[in-house]
Image 1 (cartoon, helix red, strand yellow):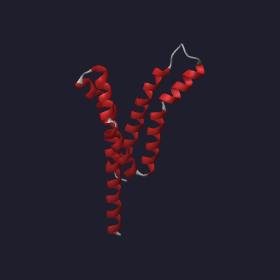
Image 2 (cartoon, rainbow, N blue to C red):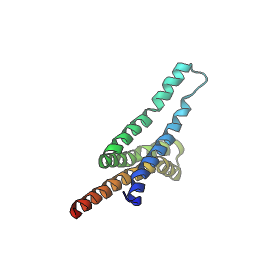
Image 3 (cartoon, rainbow, N blue to C red):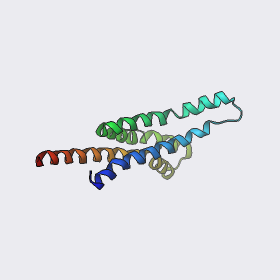
Image 4 (cartoon, rainbow, N blue to C red):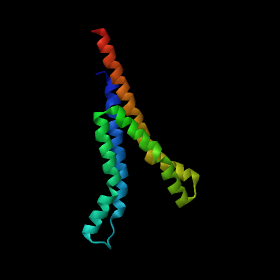
Length: 133
């Protein structure tokens, strides 16, 4: 595999893992000293559900890049209005809401695009190898 294809192969996987870890960080707000240990653990696991779902999509994308790329692109673009409206209702700032959308959603749009680019580059390389033989 050429170096450029290796980079496009690994870059979405690394970015997605980091983005999932970033989203998982928000689950830490579930800890409350007023709650029992078991309630804190349950709340923490509930807050981690989006990260588990995203990890499932990463596993899917790892095997089937085109399907995973489309899924991450839809996740990144699909949740944009919800996250924007929720943040705008909380802070009444267009620019703050847009920045939150960019920080949370943009990595998944990039990941989806990179997974699809990786799929098409590998398909193109396979077709070129078949033509030469």
